[in-house]
Image (cartoon, rainbow, N blue to C red; front, side, top):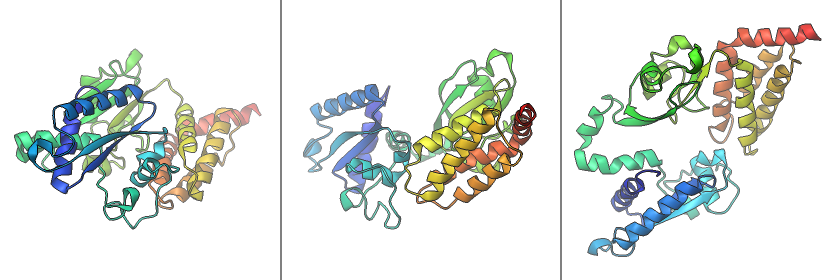
Length: 325
């Protein structure tokens, strides 16, 4: 959307023509105003050249593409909450079934996909499926956009073959840890992915390999955490984020994220108690698989991995607080 919005538009046009869709929406969070304007400019250019509108190139096929700015809610990444938002309602996930393919936007059948997937469609048309698969792995073809942030020397966005080892991405492309420090933890696929330790960095960045490592590729957003960062600070950030972004529709998620945040904040303030880690585990386990959308799992997975893999450091933080009191 930033550097080649017409690639996305072409993917949408091809998809809509194949499926028989005449109205398409590109949903963009309101904070990304510059990107939204750029995409809207590209839509205007496509209209002027006849790639959109009525009777495209004499084919009798009509297509309108609209940019819809969301209100900035993480939960609207869930497809049915996104549909509710476009309809002007509160971004709450719907009960499924029915699924959007049968009953979607404005109660009509709806195809939903993400920008990165749709932007690959023109390339597959041009070069063929075999070419696309060969760019990655036989079971997981193509490339991914890996966003690397945190304690690295060269944070950025890197397009690399699916299956590129995580260690190679961090060290060969992102320049390795910043400030001469060692790595404490890595988030491989966005904040909902379970954390990995330095001993797990040789995992290939594909869906199957990360599943075997008890994590996930997700958005391919890699966050590197250096050894100087207290793990309690990371737990507090994760807990606060999900407590803020919970839509509040489901009790396990609404109450669970709030209590995890309160407990993490208390530990960080030096007021932790010996049973706090067990309490966090119990709450997080009670959220998994018990909500309308994957938000409950997304909030629980990183928290559980932090407590399980860095429990000793968290326990020491709690002990220091107990000693002071």
